[in-house]
Length: 123
Image (cartoon, rainbow, N blue to C red):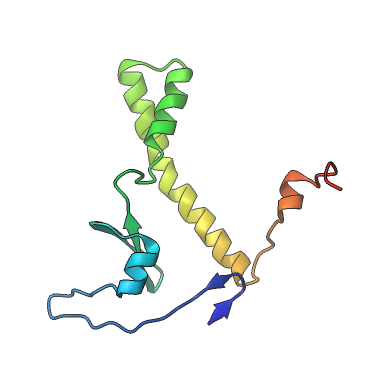
C-alpha cells in the first residue's frame, strides 16, 4: 500500500498471554532495532520504534553546548538544561502531528523552494 511518499507495509502479529509480540524480521532489520524499543501511545495507535545507544534523540549534547556557550554554569546550568530538555518531546510531537495532517491533506505543507528559495546558480 502506498500513501503519498510514505510506503506502508502491514504484518499481523500474535500477542502472547504475557502481552508480548515478536517484531517481524524484515521490520526489525530494515528499521535497525537493537536491544531496546520505544513504545508510544498516540490516539488509538501504538508506535514502536528502535532506540539506538549512540543516538537516543534527546538532543542533550546540543542543549548543553548551547547553554555553555550562553555562559551557564553550576546549578543555573542544571536548572536551565532541565527546562529546555522538557520542551523537546512536546516540540517533536507537535511536528509529528503537523506532518500527519499534511500527509492526510488536512494542512498545507511547504516545499524546499518555499523554505529556502530557488537556487538560481544551477543552469
